[in-house]
Length: 112
Length: 112
Image (tube, rainbow over all chains, first blue to last red; front, side, top):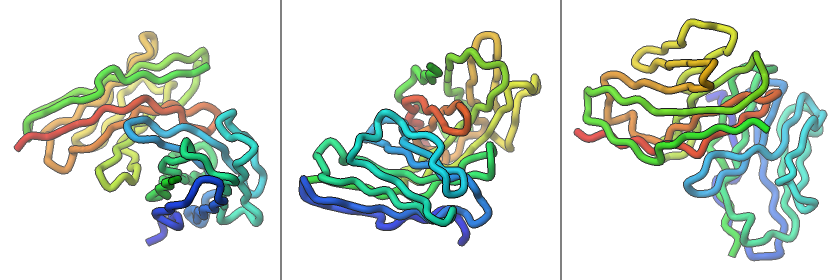
């Protein structure tokens, strides 16, 4: 299967801990996106990359959040000093330029 | 700022019948893309159908079709011959410079 993959699928952590999520996009896709989805809501845009360049960050992305895509392939999203309000599903998507975005299965984060 | 509104939090349809999900959006752009995504209980987002704003012809994809009214900024999804597997959350999305702006979603249930 060559779809978008995310790891881990589930993460439970204690408040104040740091967590890191990984996303592997479809191999030929140059754009990679991160979204956050809370229960009963539509996904909200966090940030996106074109190749290794981070082109846009949402105001939702506080200083505790950082994302990288070092070689223009996989990406990581790190949350430092997690808070209970960070509990959500974190979705990754990839696309070829402005074409359709293909989503991964998501990482469900629970902050206790 | 662009916004997407889905005014039906829940919809229900009898198997084999037709259902229409509503979506309105707000934009000052003239050229853009609109999408409907399906998110089954497993939560992986799947693209259902897309519409380019410059095309007057409504997009169709097998049992799924849209009614795109550009002047009214309306983009509804029609599902014909509904199947049990169509039960899911459906999200309308607007493509803004690459990132997607999602509506709140409509939960569709299909009754056997």
